[in-house]
Image 1: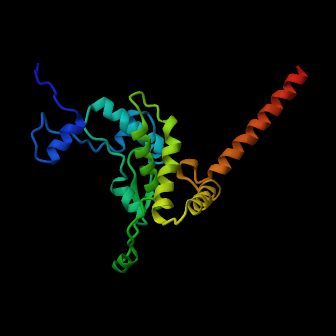
Image 2: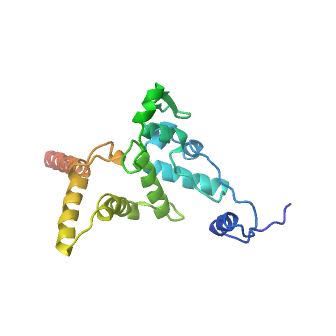
Image 3: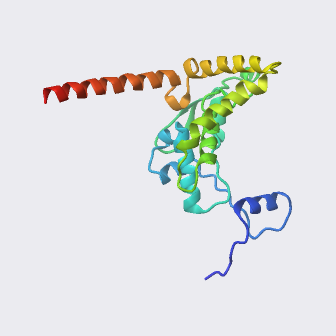
Length: 219
């Protein structure tokens, strides 16, 4: 039986390795990708299209295998998709069914993918936020929504503007929040807006309450 005992945290070990300092053992980074879906019992398609499942799968795999780093990135197929290729999502591993480049002249049409807007790239950023917010018991819900909108607000509004007054900042941020809630579709909401989902839920609750009231009167 090995008598080896770890003397560093994963972060200390990785930083030491990257900076040429001594470390207690070689850092382990497993590119699990779709295998993480299997660790939580969901299909690859479900996993690849849900930020919450991406984060949950990677954390579950991390706890199971004990590696030092976690990967919630898009991988090669995700980058190809963001560049314009079309993917298929069977129950094993996603693959390219239609490439963005069909002729050498198409190279001139390629652009650098926008991580905040192209295909599923925002999903992977969201998964990273969720993963960071999860504690040892996997409870991410308390922080996920605040982190999600705060990240979007920073990178899509605040960091791009040069407000001259506090009032101007309030006005511009109010416009952005209205856009975020009422006009911008969200991958995590099946390309619906938060307002659509919220008010649909309110109507469903109202219908449920109405039906329960009618059943109570009949009883």
